[in-house]
Length: 123
Image (cartoon, rainbow, N blue to C red; front, top):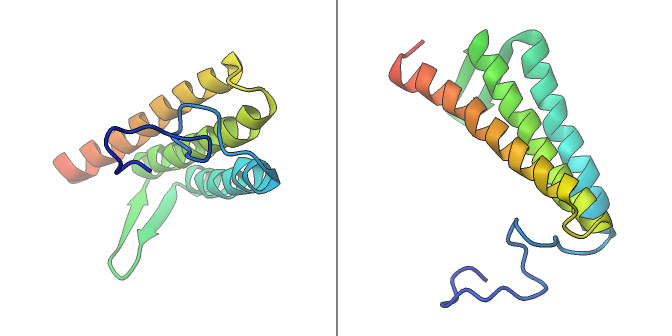
């Protein structure tokens, strides 16, 4: 695991940059079902321009903030799909790696917009 020093991942560790864990649960559950749920929430936030998240203390986003938050959720779904689905079919093929890089950039950009717009500007 990650707390071992020095970090020496085995075939059973999933470190997001190498080949993902093998099996139908990982391929179809984390590679197809989970990304569809994340993307569904992202599309809903983009389409309605409203997003609410949190537990006992929830935060509501509207307008451009909800759009950016929805884009971050879409990017997270794409990252999981590229890693677990395409990573299980084609071992480290360039489309899967490129998809993970681009979706990570989209996730960082979406959450960065929300954090800067809400956290710094307070809008």
